[in-house]
Length: 124
Image (cartoon, rainbow, N blue to C red; front, side):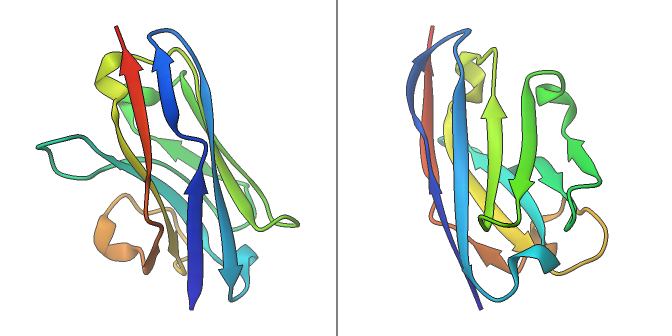
């Protein structure tokens, strides 16, 4: 079992930045691929970014490439998502999730554990 708790969300103006954190407890954190997803009001949850168990591989969805960066610190059992150059369309609840698979996955069904989410609101 893995417990995930996101933090760092908030209200920011367009062009601003936020850094989301996701702290994990429970089973061995370093064994998991960690992903970030988001869900805007009235829309389905979508994949944003993920990082492999050792941080050696990352993948971002095209809409956030060059703006968002995923990283992890296994010593602190924490994964991060740096959000730069934020746009109003980035407004959503952001979730982190953990997957025991060896390869990065973009599908929700691959992820076994989920946090409760943190709200990011970008004003224009």
